Image (cartoon, helix red, strand yellow):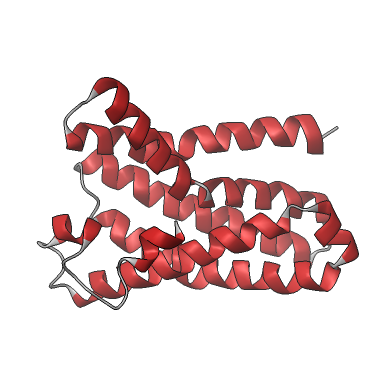
Length: 187
């Protein structure tokens, strides 16, 4: 993911994914949202991986708290709102746009609920909502994995793939998150 993000820097509006977004690249808000999203989403991904380690949470509680706050700020103020903006312009038409906008709203909502739970010192509720939030963060990876597998096996048209992975990239993650929550958290 880091390598995917690096291809957009130094800022270039005619590279990789942006090549197929030329009809929107003249919108200043789209350009800003895109770069904010790719930058802070990749940060959220890396930050999130550290947060579920029991060793980090217990032995390095201060690190957990600092990185957690950085994750919360990154998602709530930058990555999710910018994701909503670029989701509105998603490839694949209405259904892809709906999928990506719901993803951004869900990511924001679950992260906000995790933040509110920790403010109330409800650690279990915080953990549950962070599992959901991070499941949506991981959609950046799972979307690309599903895209690769679907193209490899079925070789469909590009926009058909995009419409499928727009949903599959995060809905399955949430189902897995709920299974984890039921099996390991809500005992």
